[in-house]
Length: 348
Image (cartoon, rainbow, N blue to C red; front, top):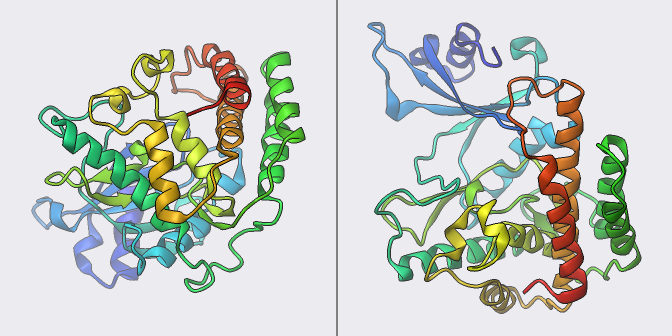
């Protein structure tokens, strides 16, 4: 087990100096292809659960293949640094770098209770157009707030290498694709080459989330226009903030677009801002020039395709046991086509 309660309980009791944690229940709530997320709930002497005191434990997946995407100390660092800012993040409680405890580093943070939208809104939630617009607008505003954080002031001056970030990202994900290619895909190779030839000049640098989208946020159950926490900071770094806009647009289909059938369709519902409205709001909030935004959307689709190809290759090698990857290979070519279309025809 990735977080054995027999080990976790006494460990937390010691480091948090609280005997309530001596006996705990541990529940895996998120695995997939990412870091493992557990709810750890203290148990009373009679086995009663103290749900209000529950915390979240994050650790790398077993057999992690991309070390930079599973660096617990790095993830803990950025969340801790953002705590005093306007960016909503959980409060961190403890970082363990001693791999003898659970077999890998891990960290513990407060549990934030909110609405997690994976594919659809819960029944009765954000069911009015103005509420859905508020959800879309707060997604933009929180991202703008993140990109406006003074990374040096919050202790993240050395958190990344922003110079040449976009070009380096193209090289990184091309290398990732080359290392895990499931078969020859000339269209993906052509998209990689086109991106490498047309990298725009970086306007500014900021903290970037790396995978910013609706289902990496928790919404307020009582106020749809409020994000309670932004989650999953494993890809965060210092870089070009427009890469976050590009990736968010991958997950922002509009009504009538074919990809709405494979992505969460909530952004196609009446009231949700269009991508053009999102871009306009972001530019207004940050002063950013979005003239090259189509390149960033094209790159995001390329990155997404490379990630999927890697999953397909690992599945074929037997490294994804227990995880359903059926249909993943069929998603690659549509992503490549969307990336090409973004570069040539525009993404907005």
